[in-house]
Image (cartoon, rainbow, N blue to C red; front, side):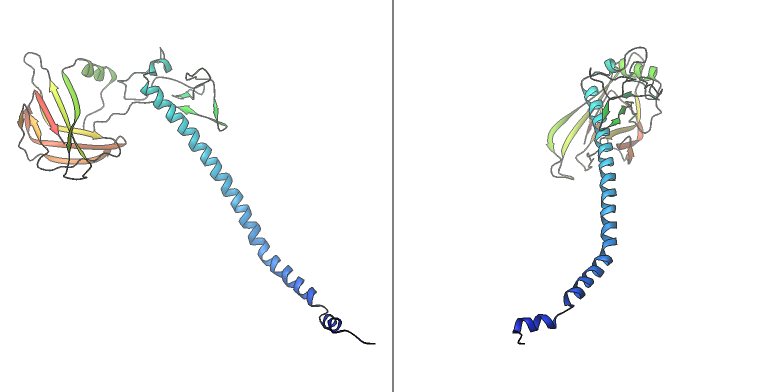
Length: 256
């Protein structure tokens, strides 16, 4: 019996395929467990990420809505009497209450107003919004609501500010100088004496000092070795100048 050459070659390779299959099975068994663990971990991480993303955007929706209510002067509508919003109350808010008794209101219902019982859902979450006043001055005791209202509404002390249009080359070349004027209208026999002057800067703003930045008192430059301090406060930065002498003041102009 004669055999062709291909037949002879195939006959000599018996069992080769089985060995290769067994090798691949062994390799698959080795890497299968890590691959399954990796897939499981990826699924868990994805779920956690989605949960946190939903939390973030739900909270952001409440913050944006609160900003809109404030900018459009709607707090008196959102928080009606008797627990109305008081702009002079810097303590614990007395306005608004959810059904759980917490101070704050749920995200607006379909009618566009805050509702203490309706729980509108955003990403399957109930969003409660709490609005409260923050006291910015860092070296003055927080006054009562009545005292703060009396100070603000008697118009004896007027604070105004404007952009001078001048570039401030002492620091950032894109910075600009800002002028703040404090005007005092005393009654007969009243005097306003000042020991410290402070400003509050929101996040992203920086104060630079050089010889051209001056404090004017009653129209004249105030020559002083006043100490300057800077500290984080109320989400921004508080800057305080302590004068080396008490000033009797009618008009103060600060150019920074």
